[in-house]
Image 1: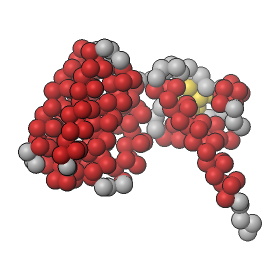
Image 2 (image 1 turned 30 degrees about the vertical axis):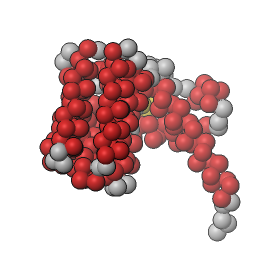
Image 3 (image 1 turned 180 degrees about the vertical axis):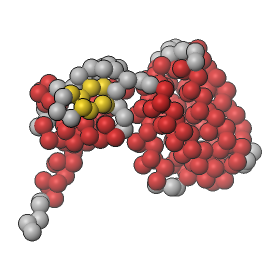
Image 4 (image 1 turned 60 degrees about the vertical axis):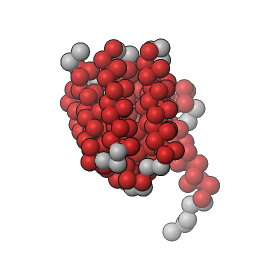
Length: 217
């Protein structure tokens, strides 16, 4: 069979990824609101790509439970609902628990200092009600464990479930209830400094499961 050129394959992948990431970010940050209809022609005009990468991106977003597709009818932004959040939360909590368990024994003093710095930025961002900065600091904090776990499957799984949780995080980090996350981070750091991988893992799991309180506040 004819072999496609590498340039062509890469170009298509880049267009598909661009469409997916742009749509995902717009859904997560609220630019595209729950229930809003996504029309191919409007998306083509906005993203500057053809219908094929847009449809591929929408299929990926549907698997991530960020859009709802009704074949032959419409595609809309998925609601922020308890069922999707709990399912994604359980997976994310398990992945971060595993990451902390694997990473804690190999954390260096530099890593521990970076954890402290990330949590300080997180606390400051919450006080200033700077939600994007809080999300970035939280990502930086947990990302240290994910990186040091040296398990490439963990970030692959998280990439699929975290976008659903990101919308809930934005709600939580804008509320006073999020202040408990700072203390939870401190506990994780204390356990990591003590070299207690099991305790750090369980504390990390509880930190992620605390997102459930967003629906109770």
